[in-house]
Image (cartoon, rainbow, N blue to C red; front, side, top):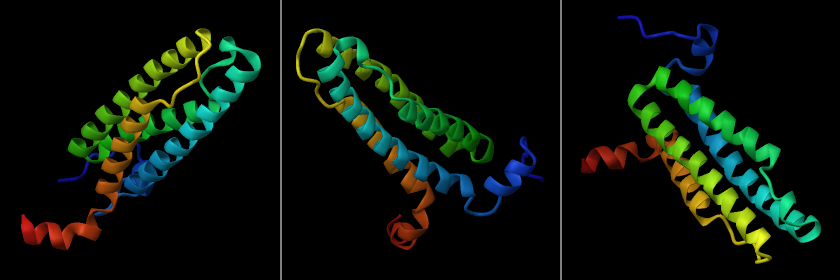
Length: 149
């Protein structure tokens, strides 16, 4: 049976083989999302201190990395259904958490309180990073895993 190929040349590059390249791309995107989250938080803290509550907003670099991570996880669904669905649910949950954390930062800034770290969004992005790393780096722990299970 021929594997499903929805995107033609993109599937040939990112979705073929035992270890599809999209898995490694998703790990890089997850790491980039964690880094851009830290940059965005620093930017929001500085903006709130210098310009007030109205300056707190979504950082464009973080928004771009989140959108790319969402699109990449949706693409993974076309390559590997089960892991793609699980990762997509985690990434969409991280996105929703980002929205709520941004609103919480805006409320803190309007009430002239110090801006706290977005702990929920950090935890959600760590879960996404751990699952993406598990998918792409499973071959490292496979011998031990197969001996136990």
